[in-house]
Length: 216
Ligand code: BG6
Ligand code: MG
Image (cartoon, rainbow, N blue to C red; front, side, top):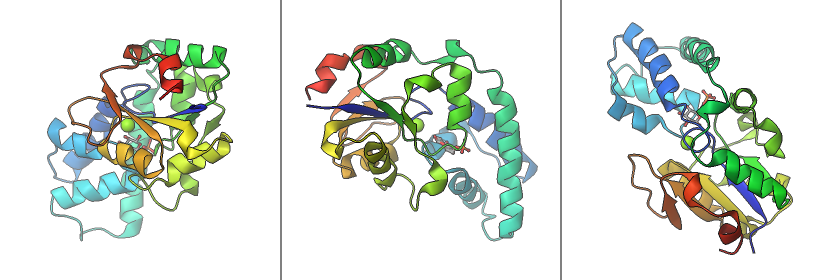
């Protein structure tokens, strides 16, 4: 019997990848690096600094900047990204999310957020669903990012459930690996990437039933 649900945010609850892309692309352009949408797929689920490192490697500029300069680049990208996030409203919830969370709340099933994003509380607030989550893991407290299971294990612990009592939801391969390494049931939300190792793959949350997932 499953007792709690743990969600990734970007790509599962709402589609922020397009805003990340606009902000990274502008910064990359300024650094003389051209990125495209296909490259952007690699940045899903990856932390802000790791995303910057990947962009610099892609442009063969990984050894050109000091740590202070890199931090300033990441900060600049984030300021732009947060400006774009101002546009978010509850209408930006992905299909089925609102209904799924409502049903979980009616059945007193605790829900948590395991996202690499430091902007998660702000995004959930803009989407009008922050109160649906009992916990939001603070990525600043993590030693390792996904695919390490740490973030999902911390979420289960904070929800006072065992890992094998949790269902995790992810749209990125690194996230599915993290959920499986944590010993949880993994639901993959499929976009372009095929999600290897997921126990179940859907296109959107309205294909799922809360009751059926509690029995997996
Ligand atoms: C993840 C996104 O959820 O959060 C990544 O999939 C992003 O693309 C990461 O880099 C960190 O986000 P933020 O908001 O802290 O820059
Ligand atoms: Mg994601």
